[in-house]
Length: 166
Image (cartoon, rainbow, N blue to C red; front, side):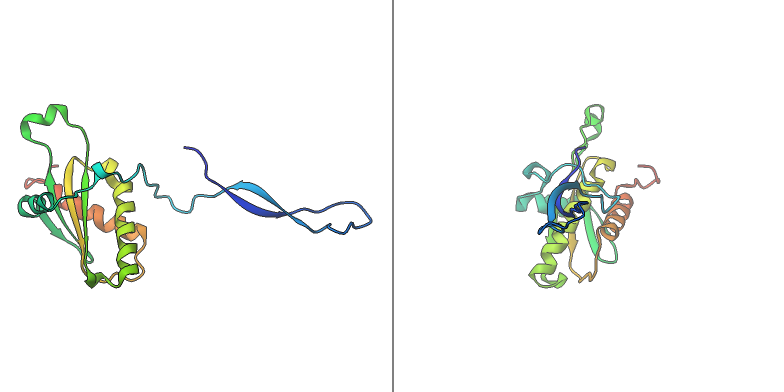
């Protein structure tokens, strides 16, 4: 993966004994940005990764398995039929339902961003399904790590078979 770059201001020190007029000037230089988080989102969030239509939301909500956590609720519907298991292509789709109970517009937008980022982080470890994630309670100070933990736990609980096998 290519490194991301940013402009950093680096002081330039001139070693000549008589100090020129601009001896302490600062020069802009490209430096790599250090990774801030061990969680690395993979891929984008294209239209094919989203549940877009009302009928698709209703299908997942009507037939899916529900789980509720402290802040999030999910409904998961498997996209794999028993006769198609030999040709499984892993593809998950997500639908977001962030209500006004989650807070004002900036809080809801932040929650949607965190949910999308956690979906991108976790999607490689999940089987093929459609998921609707709802958030209706305020979650002050939510971090990506917290959202990833709760969402992954709920999905693992919902995709577990009744016998305890996946």
